[in-house]
Amino acid sequence: MELRRLFTVLRQHRRTSVQDRAAYGQVAKDVIRHTATREVALMAVAQSMSDHAAVEDVTAQIKGRMERRRRQIDRWRKCRAACRASI
Image (cartoon, rainbow, N blue to C red; front, side):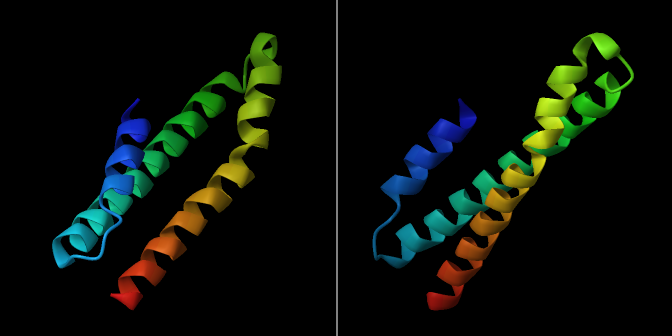
């Protein structure tokens, strides 16, 4: 739910005023931080489950999607950096 709220706020600050651009940058940073925190938590769960054969398929799914999630986080970081550079 937190990410939905953050993306809603992010869309609200896509304007041209200095205040809106500053707020946009802060919210973008919050989105990246929140997503990265969730990624770390997912990896901790996957690591703790890796010793249990009964949940091996769930562990494989979490780990299998890791690369795609990390690429998305990197894209957001680069996009945020590019937006900051253009201000």
